[in-house]
Every structure is written in C-alpha cells, then in structure tokens.
Image (cartoon, rainbow, N blue to C red; front, side, top):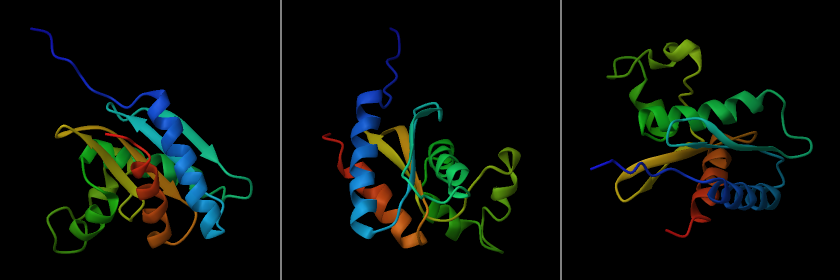
Length: 139
C-alpha cells in the first residue's frame, strides 16, 4: 500500500502568514514570516514593510530548523546550551540551524507536516507571532 505523506499546502501557508501579519501589526513590529512544508522547503514568505533585513534568513532558517529537528527552536535553545545533549547543534547543516525561539513545527495526526518561523522582534514576540500563525490552522 502506498504511503500518504501529509504536508502543509499553499492555502494553509497563506492562512498562517495572514494570521502572523495580523499579530505582528498588533505588536507594532514589522515581521518576516516563513512557512515550510513537510520536507522543510519554503512554501510562503512575507516581509512586512520595514521588517529587519537581517531577520529574513532567520525566519526561513527558524522554520526549517523546527521542521528538520521536529522541535520548536525555543526547545532547541535549551538543549543546545553548554553541557546539554545538543550542545553545538547550531554548527550543523551549514550553520543554518537557529537555536532561539520563533520556529515551531506544525503537527497533524502526530506527524510533523511543516513549520513556521518568525523573526524581527524579541524572542518572546517571535514565538507569539509564530503561535498566531499556528492558531490560524483549522485542524
């Protein structure tokens, strides 16, 4: 029997980006938001007017990191501290692994089907904007 692989769709990603933008606007911080599919590939990206240029790659890399490790980047931050089990993980994958909050995997029926990454504010704001994107999904 063939395996069916679930993944976020473009429609899902559009909903997520819209919700993230709304949350960012309410915070008064222009944001970069990225959504990746089950394979960790970019589906959608938005850079609000005035969002930090340096946060473009961070948003994309946070989403990819959350997907390839199936963990929120805030959790990786804790696990990557000196003396912890994943110390040095940020040096892997050509240095594109992000180990601070703002990247969150999307889980459906127990499977990770994509992820979102948000960057431009504080770590707490980044997490908040990413969580708003997740809340837009109706499953």
